[in-house]
Length: 242
Image (cartoon, rainbow, N blue to C red; front, side, top):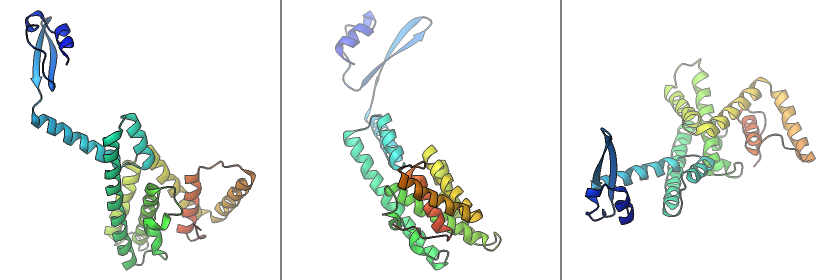
């Protein structure tokens, strides 16, 4: 609070005091219609706690999908040093996710849950996805799909760790990634279901999409189109060419 603000807002008996130094908070409390002014000095412990809380918030933002992360940074007007920190945290988070995916893919390979083990790795989608977050999303969906299939192949008996991993992946994308993450997951899951139940109809849809491309019409978003192609590959109805 500046000296001018202090002199303007404080009662007469406080105006002989010097304005508080930086880091001092002046609060006004109403008590029986009389104003009581209290000065609180923020000590080092409070500053440290505030810094830790803000760092935790930056780390949370860094774990969001790309579009959501940018939107949240705009909403909170985060820029300069804090924006650089978020990008660093995001890179660390992405690296950790990729390492986890690689370990899970190795586990899947040991149990032979996929005829194409590369589809379980984020790198497989480097030329098929729009960015790093989408690469991770598609690899994790493939893992969840294959692990669920391995669980249900025996009527739901056995392979409980795989089912737990599949459920955790789905929960992460449907419950922790906001409306966009939930919508992307649900659309891909619906596309997989449609390919399994009505492959002929889905094949006609792919042909219609190609025809629309030739005509310059694109009723589906690029993400939806990629999900249809991934679902086709996952269900064994055609390769997804990069």
